[in-house]
Length: 289
Image (cartoon, rainbow, N blue to C red; front, side, top):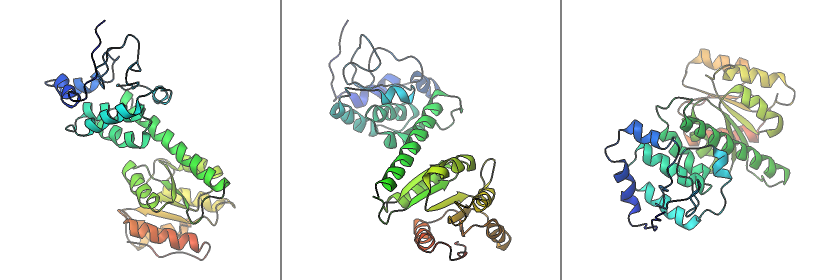
């Protein structure tokens, strides 16, 4: 068996050359099939694998559990490879390879947007979309665990725990970025059912919920919260692209504390957070445009 030495100088051009002239769909599919023995990260030819017996990474789409089980990853070496992959022209195959490198390093937060971009146009049943969902759920669980641990240890201080409910991944990321940059803890879910499941143990300081949700919509969720004694005073903000006094009246009758028209700026979101969590139970806030 011939082993190829690792040469980082050739790595950035080796990957696109290998895929040069290959149709995009076929090139992407190559990462979803059974991997070859030659590592796409370091060119090492392994007798057994994956993972690679040289760099320790997994260079193809597989279950998240396989990435989480990795031990003995050459962190410095694989990080250098991931950095060089980020410099390549963006394409589905390069995004997948970069995401696999980040997952091998344990950087789920970094891998998530790469997987999202690579999976555009993919069916929900594709291995790539399944991995994306696994990573997203795992990260959500980590955020929940972090929030619960911080509360149990009394480490929250002035930070707030925020529950974001929106079926749009883009909107969830906008809210996460707006609040986490100020040190707050955000747990994001995509529908009302998951929100109700989270509320039992999360006990957030405020809920931001989209009006249009699959199944039970945002107003329906708000009504459910007002029916429960444990969440009657919980501040709820409805987010929607709808405008007008009629819709505002609907949000008030559902028991929402405020209404925000999308897209909402971080400044408005943070202002609402400060006012509502600092003045719970003091009545309805004015709608924000």
